[in-house]
Length: 248
Image (cartoon, rainbow, N blue to C red; front, side):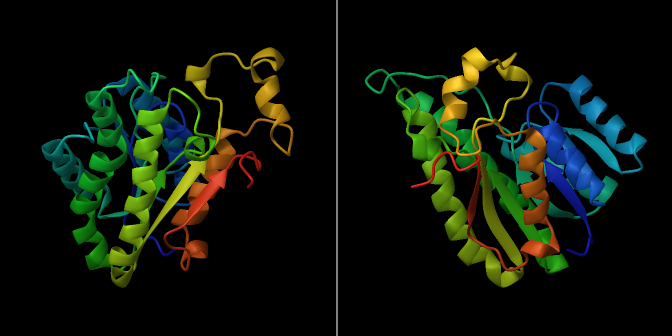
C-alpha cells in the first residue's frame, strides 16, 4: 500500500507489540509505538527501529480511555502524519476463572480491551483515513475462541465480540477505502510466558500439524501483509496464525 501516513501499534512495548512495530517499520512505515506504563520498553523498540534506518516514536496513552486516545491520535498526527494503519494489539490480564465464579466486572474488563479500545481507536482515526482515502484496521485476535478452554469464558466472549465488531466494520468502513481484519495467533511464546521447554509445551506442540511453536516474527509477517497493498481486497477476514492447530 502506498504510504501516505503512519502506522500505530498499541501495546507495543512488550509481548508481540515490538515485533509488529519493527516489522512494519522494515516495510517503510513511520511507526507510533504506543505504551501505557513501560516507557523503557517503548524506548528500546524506538531505538531499535531508528538504528536500522526506520522511523519511530514512542507515545504514552491509555487506549481504553477516550480522552487519552484522542490525545494519542493528535500527537501522532503532529509527529508522524495521519494514521493510515492501526494495529489494535494492547491487552490486559487474562485470568482463568471458572464460569460459575466469573463476575460481570471480569467480563467488562475483557470487553474494555477488545471492544471499547478498538472502537475508540477507530472513531479517532477514521476521519484521517477518510481524508487519505485508504486505511487498515487490524485487530490482534486469538485462536482461544475456537479452543474454548475452560476458565476463559470472559476472554473468549470478548474475542467473539471482537469478531462481530470487525466483520461489521468491514461493511461500514469499506466504502471509504478502509479494510478491517483480524490476525489471530495461537500460543506464540513471548517474555511473559517464561522459558518454553519440551515439558511445558510438548502436549501443545503435538496437537499442531507442523509440530512446532510459532514465533512472533511469523505473526508480524501476517500483520505486515494485512497492512500492505497485497491485501487490498482482503476485508472482514480473520487470519489464524497457529500452524493449523484449530483446523476443523
